[in-house]
Length: 256
Image 1 (cartoon, rainbow, N blue to C red):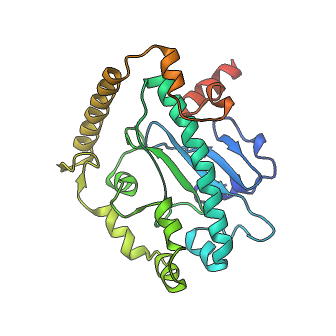
Image 2: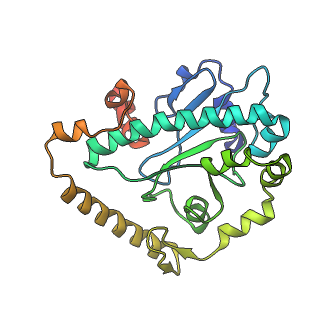
């Protein structure tokens, strides 16, 4: 299995429950949620649509191929991905409260020009602090508001206009979007500019540390009070390893 087709292999698996716990987070009859193998933030997941009788793996290659196949089916698929993302965000919020005592934004969206085959929705926390965030391309591909990362709400908005508008937006011209990955670095939180990734990463860590300190001051409550403030989530949330790091740790404990 090549790296570029790994997601397709996961999406077409008849029984996703056989996937390693370091890969699989959850699945339904129409979607599968996995940990990003190289997370670009503390929490980073991918939600994939599963092929069906009406939509083949080729139809689900990316947003453009899906919309070209059938507008109405495409809308159904994107809404299903959004529904799973809403549930996942609830579980992430619970984990944020348990581990850090506060919550911070979570972004859900698609890359305009994905690097891997098979449509996938990114669900990623806004800290963007991770050893796997290594270069300008990585950062600019997830920077909110930069243009390469397409919020799922914006994509759903494409379907509300005319057919011509949907066709135009879903063309996703590679040349138009890939130039965004080469643009100068600036912090998505304060707009400060940086000459290189080491400087930006150091700054992002400082931003994260400051956020944690503000969160700690704001939420000086007992565990019971914090529990009551948690967003709605599936009952299994507290028992499930929700970050890839904790999932790997759990897998190692099982192997021991």
